[in-house]
Length: 332
Ligand code: ACO
Image (cartoon, rainbow, N blue to C red):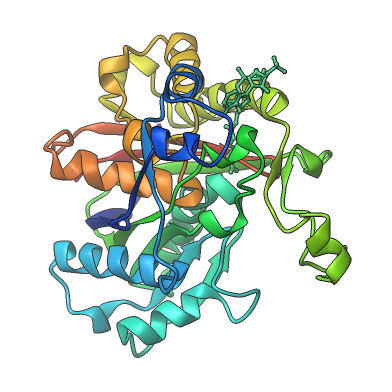
């Protein structure tokens, strides 16, 4: 185990999901699917879709405000905001800058991280390093997504999988060694972006009437291949962070995995030899909220009393890119 002279701890957690519940039966009215197919193939029963006038920054602000309240600090103490998202309000400025203004945070460095569904865990590692550098004191880390506008409601293989929401934490430097974020890592393989992508709207395929007509502004996915890769990289990211920090999987108290598919989480549990009772899952209620999923699950688990002082938590995610990331947290 690496020994630290100072640490980065979680001061508070928060999350937000939109009010509108969309059940599998509701989806079956839009595409040729069924509650039975979605539940048995994915574990999802329902998801939340944001209102037309609710942007990703609004979801992010609601979760962020709850995390700040839980941290019990004055919001002016925050000097760093990082928002992980693949569905920003607009290509620029960053969603983090919009959150800075909407939450009224006076002196902050603000930027977005694009690592798709791995974004929240990637961002924990980035914020951890920035706080340990000594240049920042308190960070607001948010994973937020409004996936609903990029879903193709003519493609049953993708539109039933995703939902909207946001999860957040306030991180702080602490003088107590060896607590909080013990370590974090991220990986990538960009050799086949078409596995999961939104083809148009960037510099490769700028928005045009042709790109709109070809439905290239919607999320496209090779689900079968992503599934295989996900099982592999979730296992690798988990094993690598445990080895890096000198722990055995039997020492983990709670796993917060990215919520994409229950069968992927089942495979991870078997591979890591960690019983399912040690996983916190909410996929059934929210579907895959991409960069928000780990943050929402962490907040839920904490508020449900599933995380106690001294507990060892494994956070692990994968996403488009491909990307993958993991973090170990010893709860303070
Ligand atoms: N309803 C009914 N039938 C469907 C649906 C649906 N919603 N979707 C697909 N089917 C059909 C297919 O057309 C196919 O029919 P066919 O045999 O007649 O051709 C059949 O069901 C089986 O399809 P598969 O694609 O083989 O189904 P599979 O068991 O692989 O499950 C799924 C598909 C759920 C997408 C799975 O592959 C998966 O979860 N993959 C990983 C996806 C993922 O995790 N994505 C998130 C990445 S994170 C990020 O960065 C956003």
